[in-house]
Length: 571
Image (cartoon, rainbow, N blue to C red):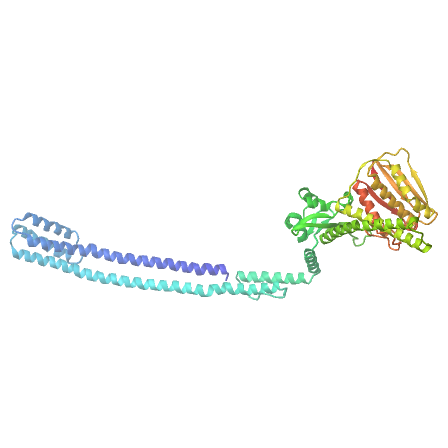
């Protein structure tokens, strides 16, 4: 039987019995009330009338019309209230004797007869009251019996519902709950075994069907793929670096918790939305989806995260796949990773301050060494033998090298701290080239290298700091001389392209491996296998100098075919 039917039958029967109990109680009260009213109306009133007639009879005297009238009034009421057997005849005798008394009010014999008639009427009503009281008592006893029977039935039905109904509902739910816990623990072979025809039977059948499908799903490859997907999502969410995944149309596929923290959006506000649409209202999102080729200079992102200003390095990885049966790769999206480099940036700031301090302090003793060397070379201080002269030359070269390194470190520290001072003005590119060639002429002559200038005529002036730009060109030429063979040629080329003046230094040295071309302008980087004569800072400083003047730098090189280092400045 269905649970709903059981509830309807049980509660409905209980409700019906309560109605029956109410009706029986009400009907019993009505019967008792009727019997009581019948006694009051039929018998008690007669006794009251009889009592008043006796009182009036005792006061009736000869020709006392007032008392006769009172007696006559109660006698008339009694005549209208005849209800019991024999009461009519007794009342008729009373009327007859009272009529005689009216003629002779002092006849005591008639008064005595009238009293007897009244007592007879009272006796009839008293007997009737006793009989009717017995009937009312019997009615009350019957009412109590029926109320007790119906109440007992209501109690039994209610007790049966109280005992059986909770178990009928709770036991299947308990069994179903235990089975659900087993399913939650991946025991997909669990089944519910009650097979009643109630709603719980339908629920058990549906549950068993679901468990069977879950077991089939658990055994399928789809489950394994879903499990691996959840594993990857968990790994991504537990990574300390913010990560955002986009499809090939720029729709956000996933974003981990770290990325949500710094972007300031909720997961539901970003996943499934176009990145370009989010970038309209979110500055950080706009900077994240901006391609590196669209930015003039790759700089770390400064973002307020983890309670302080943090630095992140953006990496965009393009994801491609080769579909089954095809040879051509297709783009399926991008993954944006923000590497937290705050610690390295803080260390870099400390390093820069340290270098600036040390470099500045080194210049004074180096200057003292150079002054001492000049005094030693002065003939007035005395003659030196050949060994001493050789030692002085060695000390002079080392001090000159230290001075150069110190200058480069100072320039680097100025660039990194943003304290570099640029004197931008209209500068003649020919004069810059001439200044640089003169500075490295002695170095080139030592290796018998010819410096050739190929410059277009009538070149426009460039917007540049002539001293810093000359320093960059000198650095290019010094590197070209260092890595070129003796008696070779270095070409310095000047030309105008796209409203910019391009400075090129072309050598015929051994060139640079393609793997290292993108790193030659990094700080402290030196091409593996090259002579370690420098600090690895010259090209990095050159790049900073030129980019600070809104210019650009680059290199073109092939291993064994020489290199072309260039920079360009706006006119």
